[in-house]
Length: 381
Image (tube, rainbow, N blue to C red):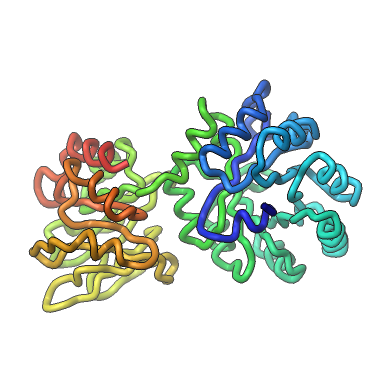
């Protein structure tokens, strides 16, 4: 399968192999690239990236060893500027090569794209800012990567990255760097990325394949009805992926606002009837019906609908709830009477993108019991 074809449908990951990083130093200097490649393939990676540049302690032999170990498409990653680099990549077993717009003018990049096409290689054209993204689009690059890491300072800023990813239309988008948690991977997914490229996080993990599988695993787990910072901190510590803040005036779980949380999680602002800007990562919007919230809600990312929050009727039960949720198209965040005792059965029945609970984690409305929070997250993950 070609590299591009492996990334076209759904959302997935490109697992990277690198022995060191200029910003982080040694990561896995004695790593077995063949073993890592086989592990990534078992874990469901769409493709594998292999650093071949000596600044990352990489060699072409690493790419050859990966090619001998896996049938996955392989991306040769280095600082390529000449046609001979691409020929070497192809001969070593690559299916695609990285082209860095930071280091290439448009004419050179276009010539390399054409050379790669003649060799049967795909290209991942990497941009770091809006100007470089405009160049990639003007060059009609089929696969565009947005790197959250500034290669001059090595600092990572994911918010501009996600905004740029959301601008990529009609071509394959890859979010690169700065992804260490399920929520961060999900943020790239919601912004429109076809895949995330993950390197240092996997290379630091005791088991890179297990970490990759964790980043892609679903459902995400939401703790909703948070009103106190100590409860937010407890939910983060327990491993929640999504934190819900209800901003409806009539709710007994109304929060004063969206509270602080690290960027390892996503903050969800829950509204009924109208919305306002809060800085939250995701909006859960319920229409107002008969004086209370609608049963279901739209999930909005940057104003665009990206999924559906599926709940029980207001203060009622519905024996067809799980069947109904299973029939909803697209991403489903499943709610409604879920707790540690029944969430796994619900997940098995629906296969939701995320699960949500407020009451099962409470000591009182808006006040969390930290032991119950931990039990909910542990059962749902």
